[in-house]
Length: 338
Image (cartoon, rainbow, N blue to C red; front, side, top):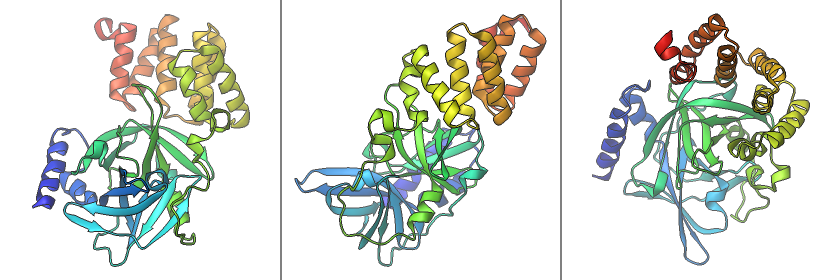
């Protein structure tokens, strides 16, 4: 009976997102690989997370879900499964739970090098501790190189309890593990790359759930990757600090479109329009699908009175993100005058 209720919940959520690309049949198929992870610490306190079956008898989740747990189980509906071993990568916050004769079919592992900006994705996990898996739809908003792979930022929101949940492309292929978000109401949502899961499969098994080091996203601020460090000043509109960080970022990673884009944002708000325009173009040269840089170039063209260029940008942006194209039309008055 519980399985029927879970399936019904997933179908209902899909029906509310009829514009999404994955079919309800595909969603039903991949959601059967998603589990809820229950933990108990030494004080008897309980915690919840999510996980996904990535190989026969193996479930991937976040290590911070399991940290210092004395008891762990994976649940799907009324069925509980108890792990017999553990593999850990604490720096990257990825853990693999090993089971014996786990009767759940694994999903297909993808390749983050095939992802592109504005690509549709969807997540399935147990946000807010929901027993039924919850599906959210979104797009890839940014990709950040890190440790020979790529961190994925998406607009597919998740909440407490969804740590370790699955991020799929529209073919139902696993591309990431949803892990952390930036502070604030308009937070950014980040997923770890599937490549790190593949590497962890070759790691030795361990017996302890005690953390050996903090994850890269929870180290002191100055030790975090630049893509994390720029978020607080960006959200607080502290353009001088954003400019300083983005300058250092672009020097360290000159092939990173996000570094140049954020430098352009800082310069634009500092009145350095010539430099900002050049750096938005630099971001577009590196990544022609960078909708954010294209949007800013459209605004600049409108302010300069270059309506032909602004119209070209609107058309190009519509092919990447229709919502952003409409937003640009509204911001430039094109919606009523064009």
